[in-house]
Length: 209
Image (cartoon, rainbow, N blue to C red):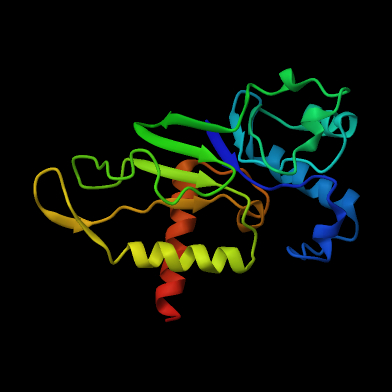
């Protein structure tokens, strides 16, 4: 099984009372809760792709966290993953570390980046039932103004039309999904689970207009 998650920010104590306002008593409680939520879901043979900002800690502290997490971890590097430059950190504990990746997930393409890409490779591809075949998974954006702005763009793209290869006018697919850890209560989730959660967010936005 493969899971995805973004912006865990292990050791980042400021997120308890600023920006995310996660509400944990201290950073130790936050770390322990995130480890528990991860291991409750992820088995030893599973894969987890972290879409950046895994840890605010140094190399040694981050390595100790990784040792406690189930599964094989793959990392899309985020702007706060400074532990990767720590001489005491061995990056081979990850399956790989990349700035960008494209993978296949159950006959669908996933485009992976820490930062959202609004026009991504394979965006217009659909399957035989007309469903999107490509999904852009990202992190970086927490519950901030940036997220509101990106939501406006995504909702706008849902109204746009383009001429398909068959010559028919159809909606432009825009499957940009923020895998923000707070949204999943710090559990890594499958592509299908993130799609379902994203659809719920879109429905709530439509109902609130």
